[in-house]
Length: 197
Image (cartoon, rainbow, N blue to C red; front, side, top):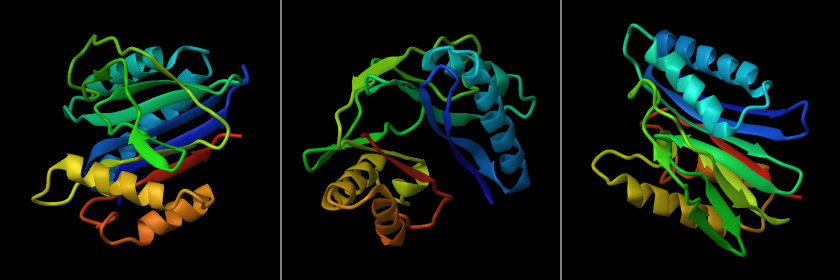
C-alpha cells in the first residue's frame, strides 16, 4: 500500500486532465495523503486554471501538512490542438514515444517537490504532440533501483517503451510491468500510457 496515483478526466472546457503523482511514504498515511492530493487536483482542475497554477496550489496544500511530508506530481492538460500543457514538481518527466524513439519531455522548468518550498510558483511547459504519439507517465518505482543512478533506470524504461512501439498502450504497460528489470517492485509503481489520435 503506497502513495502512487494517477488521474485522467475530460474537463468541462474540453481539455483532458492527465496527472500522475507520488505521495511520500508507505502504508495508510501515504494512502491518506495520496487521496487528499488526488481529490484536490480533481477539484482544482475544474477551475480552468493552467497546469502550473494547479501545481502551485497543490504545493500550498502539501506545505500545510503538519507532518512535513513531500510529494511529486506531473499535471497536464491535453487540448484539442494536441498540445500538452504540463507542469512538473520533482517528478520524472513523461516519456514521449515518437517514430520509434522514446525520450523524456523537456520542461521549461522542473520545479521542486511539492511541500519543499512554500509560495513557489510552478510554470507550465507546452509540448506539441502528433497523431500516433504515445505518452508514458510513470512514478519513480519504475526507474529507481537500489545502488543505481536514476538516469540509468530512465534510459532502461525509455528503451523498453521504444521496443514496444508497435503495441497498444495497454500492451506497452503490461510489458513494462511484466519486466523485472523495469518494475523491480522495490517501491510501489504506477504507469499510464496515452495514445494521441
